[in-house]
Length: 203
Length: 203
DNA sequence: ACCATTTGTTATCTTTTGTTAACGTTTTGG
DNA sequence: CCAAAACGTTAACAAAAGATAACAAATGGT
Image 1 (cartoon, rainbow over the protein chains, first blue to last red):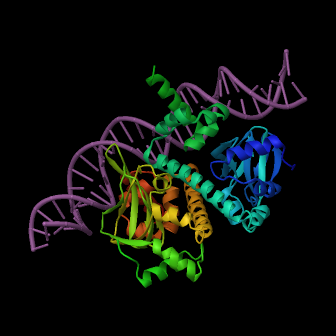
Image 2: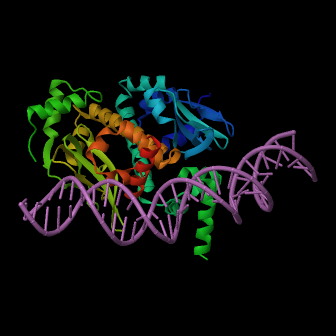
Image 3: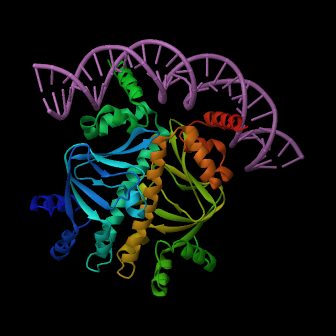
């Protein structure tokens, strides 16, 4: 775990601008709470059964979230550069995670550990903006999840895949299809059939 | 829309205690931003196509969230007394809601309209605690949604229903079955079959 | 360049779910 | 109190998805 380079700091600062803008004095204190870690392909950022003590921000690379159910590997989500990465529930509650988070490409991830997060929430200089930042980020992901649940309830697997074709460029281009299948809530074999069906219908 | 009774204020204050504790001076200002509205059975709290300008807290009663897809009514969620009620995404973004929220029982709901919310977020006396309150509430619902998405991806409809039998007392006892079916991501007919299957297996 | 692993497709068969309609019961509202 | 609406179950059929296995294609590591 290293300190951040100036380029990494600039990237991070720009990306979080819609959520929080620190003045120079705040920024200097804020970045003292950050580290960066590098993950090799297939290396784990979070493991099921262990507490996730980090909130991550992906500078480069990508991760997938997955559960092991009856010995089967079920992918639930993906995150890419400039997105958050964490087993959110475990980080927030301090309880062991029920899922794995794994780098799928060599990845550089900014880490805030829970102690530093608590320190910032208790530091009068930062507390207000960190609370606000946290609120806006939580609200952002809440809305994403809301959409995703709505899709599961109102759409067929085929419709969800067609939607992904329009909006999921990173996922489609950078993730293997059997991971995408579980992400859509179906089996890899079933996704393959859906793809064929679409191909035939549109030709 | 009326002012709140003392009993309603007490109920609200007690319920939000895990999230935020106001001192007396703050509380007096805070409650000036609240109203209470009463909804008859089947009356709408939010309508698709219209902006949801309220964040609600259900004092009594219950609501269901639903979408109209190709003319079909698809229930996505329920909320009961002492829970929040809002078309969250619409409230946060100010864009028209895509779903309806409807009282299923006669309901009393505390309302914070967006103007009052903004006023509190800009009032130095309240801003910090409101930001924190908002963060904790958003995080709470974020974790709920995370679990729900995980259930859609890792469990069969039958498994989701069995889980609901353990944890969804209010839903099972107070909501009609065809609403519950869509909530689980299946049709009412299918839920009826699953129930029969479970009955036969366990007898 | 080679071999092992991973990934994607296809086929077969079984199970589950969706769709539609009918039927009886319960609930609701005037 | 009664007629209408809502609700839950069941049946019959069609469509979709799961499980498994075989095989082909792509990928990766050495």
